Image 1 (cartoon, helix red, strand yellow):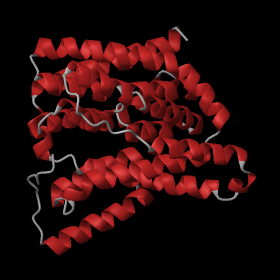
Image 2: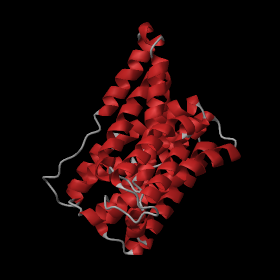
Image 3: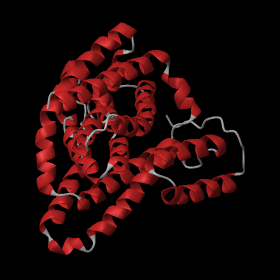
Amino acid sequence: MQKESFIFFKVEAPLQQLIFVVLLLLSPIFASPPIALVFGLIVANFFGHPFLELNHKATNYLLQFSVVGLGFGMNVHIAVAAGKEGFLFTIISIVSTLILGTFLGKWFKTDKKTSHLISCGTAICGGSAIAAIAPVIKSNEKQTSIALGVIFILNSAALFLFPAVGHWLDLTQKEFGLWCAIAIHDTSSVVGAASRFGPEALQIATTVKLARALWIIPIALITAFIFKNKSGKIKIPYFIGLFILAMIANTYLPQMESVAPQLVSVAKIGLTVTLFLIGAGLNINILKSVGLKPLAQGILLWTFIAIATLISIIYLK
């Protein structure tokens, strides 16, 4: 996943680092989250990524920091109501996506572990789910990299497609928040897409998505049983607890009124930088390594969950 790709302009290391850092710092000023992702992709593939080995850890910590910060702009009562409404959608979508993913993997004759990682990433929360499930099934670097590549490519597309479709169908902020929380893979892309649609969509999407992320735990346990791995360690997303504490503080502590807006603003900057780094990590080697069959499985699975969820939200709610 972290091999340096072909770059169009070879420059000396100090200049490469300077270009990357300057554009990284400028991205929150001049770019929206989706544009920042594209900006990062272009910069890294034109000039190279001088800190590629640190990219995954940086995006992981920055995303967690940003999500917790966004909690200071949310209300517990609205979040609980959104969580209750999204609960049934979450269960049905996770189960159906995992079942369909298994059948598609067999149909395309995709490697079993790669197929399961793609299914889990689509069903729960993208790269975070893959990172949690990979050690449970003892996947090798290639299997994990292919699954992550599929998810990252589709996440990038979702940042642009979902807001456009949402406006085209004239979805309410509530409808859009639910839809992108369930149908977009990674939390970063969910938050990025919802933030473009409106504050209510952002609150609903973030809450439902983080509640969905907790399903990593039971799915990992079931996976360990299926793959007969009794020693697999499960990564629990503890930062969700901090997000909940931030919501509680914002709802019940009057003192937060003066500082909460600043914390949310910093969190949004963090999200933009996160998406810049995610784009910078999508080098040409990753795109080439994915392969047509895993990508086809990922696209069909994602199309299914996106359309089925949208129809359910609009017509069956």
